[in-house]
Image 1: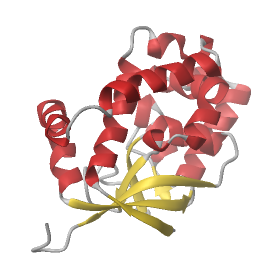
Image 2: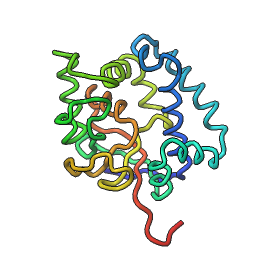
Image 3: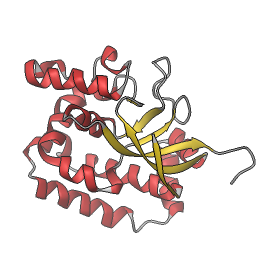
Length: 205
């Protein structure tokens, strides 16, 4: 893991709410695979134009209203842009409806399971993972690789929102962007950039 740059919490909040806004746009989940890269890029631009105009107090209100655990965890962490290997990260338990055994180990392992399923038996992918991962691979990878407001969000292992409770300890626990991360890993990426949260030291603001 390499910490590249310290960032303010507002950047992480923007990232989470931008990606959520994109996924909640009409038909986004069902038609992801039908979009062209240009259409997906336009969706990202629309989300950014709306969300980046909001002050942090509004972002906090959105988080506190719908995702209180994230509101608390995001504000309780120091944040960095980090480069991490897929062996150092783990996805949320059963992220996107993936089989639990696929998510017990590293993101790299999860990506291998998904790659094999896409090649041999796509029906093994259930619920959100069935549409999201193939759609991201087909449509969104160039944007996901370059757009800072689509970086996955991760916490130091065992902290933050603790989405891997009971699973193998990794250096980082993915909190948001699991489907994007799995798509990158399944596509052969071994290093990805993430927003990485480390609990603030007691007494720090």
